[in-house]
Amino acid sequence: MEPATLISLSSVFGLMATFFQERRGRKEAQTQATLQEYIEWLERGRHTELVELLRSNQDLMTATDRFMRTGHEEILDRFDQLEETLAQSLISTPGWAELTQSLNPKARLSKQAVDILRWFDATGASNVIELRHHGGTALVPMEGSGGHGNYEPEPDEARFFEADLELLCDLGLLIDGMNSKGDRKYTIKREAVDLVRSLGE
Image (tube, rainbow, N blue to C red):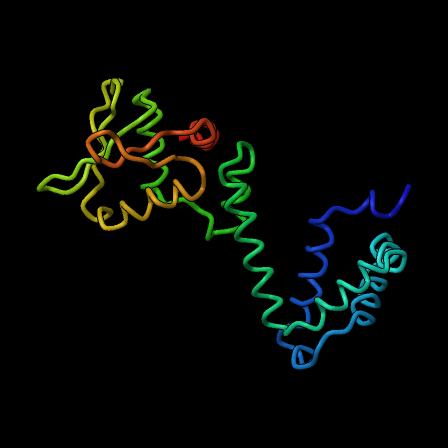
């Protein structure tokens, strides 16, 4: 079996991230990492499949060497961005939600965001509109309510209401739009229902 078939992208990126994390805080972090140093580190850790893949694939060797020449902190920043992107994609995937939230606090939904999804699911509605009134803002089901009425944020959470709704849309759990009157409308997605049900109470 070819080495490439045994190694996933997550393994390649994970090992490289670990290599640079280990250099952080040491004097080596002040110097540019080299491809040879990385290969020697892989060999010490007995990651023979990746070493074989690097040595048998000139394009991969060249790309890895070029990547190593990037600044140490910039590389770690890139891995942080990659981790955040991965966490955001998994938080809306059934079965991965609790693991992702445990490993990556940045991806953790606030209690209010989860409450919004729970309420949305409980109403049985597919769409809700956001109505502003003198007391604040409320979400109102466009069809039925399942006896659950409107959703209004708690006073101490009201200032984060819009941010939580925006996050839910960014994560692909809600779809935002407008109704014919120009009111903001939110549509729940199947992934959101699967997520809140997987979280339990």
